[in-house]
Amino acid sequence: MSAKTRLPVGQEAIRIKGWFGAHRYLILRRLSQSFFLGLFLLGPWFGIWWVVGTLAGSRTFEVLPLTDPLVLLQSIAAGHLPELTALVGAIIVLAVYALIGGRVYCSWVCPINPVTDAAHWLHERLGLQKGWQPKRSARLWVLGTVVVVSALNGTIAWELVNPVTILHRGLVFGMGFAWVVVAAVFLFDLLVSRRGWCSHICPVGAFYGLVGTKSVVRVSAANRVSCDDCMDCYAVCPENHVISPALKGKPGDTPVILSPDCTNCGRCIDVCAVDVFAFTHRFDPRVSETAKPAVDAPSEYAA
Image (cartoon, rainbow, N blue to C red; front, side, top):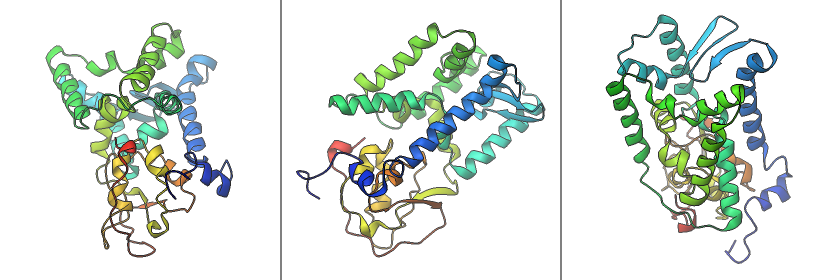
């Protein structure tokens, strides 16, 4: 399909699959994000204490401990010896995200994700330039800085400025300053750097990307021979550099997206009218036919 006749992003999928079929995983993600946030608010808002704590550390039904491993790492760097329950909770979380993909946290759990997605939606509607795009390694430098600062000042440094933590406190005790933080993230992605917060800055995403390097659950372009080069997948993917190796690889290359940057959000599956993509596992070698010759993604969709 030529650039002149290309339909707006996702419209061909809507025509073929219907609106729900073209937004299935997006809807499921919003439900998942609402569910996890709601669990933590049941106690403060309604007195139903199924879960006590926050995403940084919690106990479910007074039995299951869950600890953010990045928080634990900062705590250890700060010189605080963790309790056994914190260690157990961190191990459980690490095991889950190592299996399903670390950055699943970013797309299916993090309550800031809808904010950055909204900023990207408005960014595209306004036709703004992509703006400042630091190297993807920048978030690894931020991650390292967070650990070093924790070690130097003896605090869990990131939790002092973490938008997720600030939003949670705001929802419990009154938004106030939390609105400023949420607005800052929104405006940063809208006006300064397209998809800048999650893709280039946030150390939590960087950490979970490292955790999920060898994760099992993956997205595959197994039906890549059917690709009609509409580029809708590149347009909606928050980390679109992960697509080309699987979709446009050389004959014999795996169709499985193996980059730890992939958030397993499923939007490429939603918007693909010819069903190129599907969820699978990292050991799945299936591909419908020999891949088409490699073609670079257009610069307009480059991260």
